[in-house]
Amino acid sequence: MSPSPSRSSRASSTGRSGNLKQQLARLVGIVIVLILVALITRYCGIEQDIHFMIKDQVQAIDGDTLKSANAEVRLYGIDAPELYQTCTGADDKPWDCGRAAQAKLKSLVARRAVDCTPKSRDKFDRTVAVCYTSAVPNLGEALVREGLAVNFGVGDAPGPYSAAEADAQAAKRGVWRGLFDKPFDWRQAKPREGD
Image 1 (cartoon, rainbow, N blue to C red):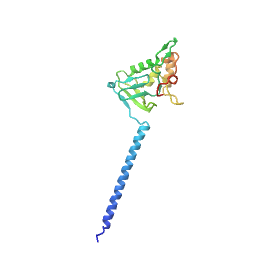
Image 2: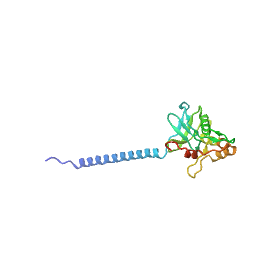
Image 3: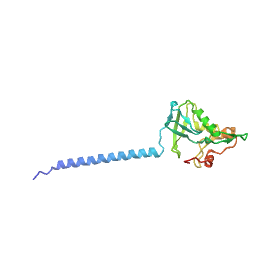
Image 4: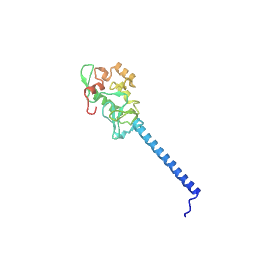
């Protein structure tokens, strides 16, 4: 007859097994928390600031979008005329307001580092952000103040640059010097692929 294990040996084995189960449960809990944090970060807009350095060769691809090799950012709170959009001046002559908006944005970021604070993502999965340089505290507001973009809200909420837009309208700067279709309306009339 083989000797039966002593009570202390069984208790010690049961204790180790219980300890192992607790450690495994903690590990599973930590993994679940890490997965949840990753999902919240990805889908709830928690993003790091974006810093375009001078050497990044930031391009203004239109009047409200910046792009480098590593990132594409749409300026928050504005809607600039589309690149090929034309407006009518006070003299009733068409002018390339979309190209003018792009040229102004290019000049604002030329040879400067650009910093952007993300606000959200748009339907094309671009980061939507407030951006600035050492010389321009808010690129979006500067474009609205020049009349080369309109203040853009979401739904019934007004955009953040109402005062800048009123200033541009009163001074008849940019698109406000004549007639124009708001960029959103222009896009509705001339949709691009993917819209």
